[in-house]
Length: 108
Image (cartoon, rainbow, N blue to C red):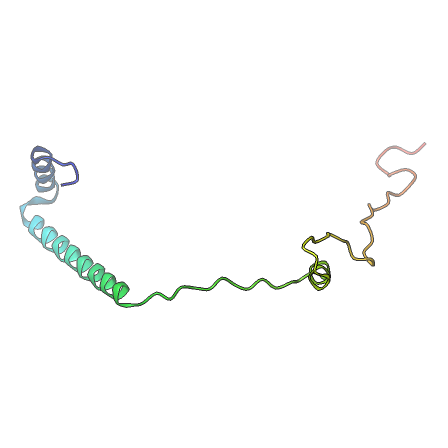
């Protein structure tokens, strides 16, 4: 059981007896047993629910053309799609730096 031998199990029980005492140990064992039983019951219910519920296969989403280049290529019967930039797009420009002194240095 989990790679624990009889000697290790006896040592664990002896330590638990010393730590919790003879009065409290039966209460802890009882509550641990109830918790394990509830866990088994819940896992069996879940396993039964999953085995009863049929799983429908999902169809892959249909690919829809989204760019004008794709639509144009499909309507022309071409299998090759060109990556074209829109005509009204302008290249990004860097902001211009002000000319003259920056004000950080001493003025003459």
